Amino acid sequence: MAHVIDIDDPADPRLDDFRDLNSSDRRPDLPEGKGLVIAEGVLVAERLLDSRFTPISLLGVDRRLQELGERLDRVDVPFYRASAEVMAAAIGFHLNRGVLAAAHRPPELELTDVLDNARTVVVLEGVNDHENLGSMFRNAAGLGADAVLFGAACADPLYRRAVRVSMGHVLRVPFARVPDWPRGLSILRERGFQTISLTPNPTAVTLAEAMTGDKVALLLGAEGPGLTEHAMRATDVRARIPMAPGTDSLNVATAAAMAFYERVRVQAPGSLA
Image (tube, rainbow, N blue to C red; front, side, top):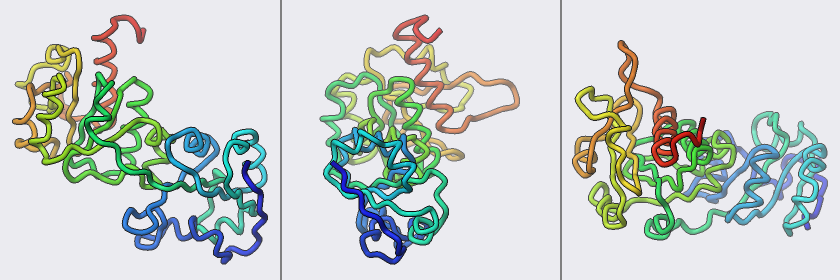
């Protein structure tokens, strides 16, 4: 079970895994640095403890320690109990959520393993906004997408802000990288996936018309530029979400949520009524 250790000095080296979280070049969740995963808040910390990510320590106020309760009985790690003031001095800002959990990054999952039991996946190109990425994972979890796949130029899904915005679902929804982008999309086709590029182009068929495969991969690009032509050429069909006159696009995470919903509706009409 977790070992509670009281800390009253923000310079205590035992807090180094949480230090300077707002620093662009020293924060511990940089992949090229310590490469840790940082979960903020009780709910996200709980999801970390229930995930494939191995926790190494927690830092929080006494109230959050009590709220985590029996969840901590299953882990053999230190819980550094500190005041909100000590926490703020160590991490670099006041944390309203009152608790942090740190974990090691496990080896990245292989694309073929992620696809083994999947029927609906989203594939991203150039999505480099951490909040959009976090929202994408939350939407995927809520609407039954099986995995998130990364093409070129995407942000780190395990950055603290992405983990927080995802409400910890980035720790639960499998993700992997597509090699040799975009030629690596052929791996999905070989596994029986219909690949669909989402585009605002009014000449494209609607998503409802396009989505005919038993297994579907939905491709989305960054806000603004969208998917590259090179990536869209590597897919089976281009599709659009019908929109009201005078608008041409949606937030990428919102577009993904609508695509996931349409996928569930097509698979099981009435199931989301």
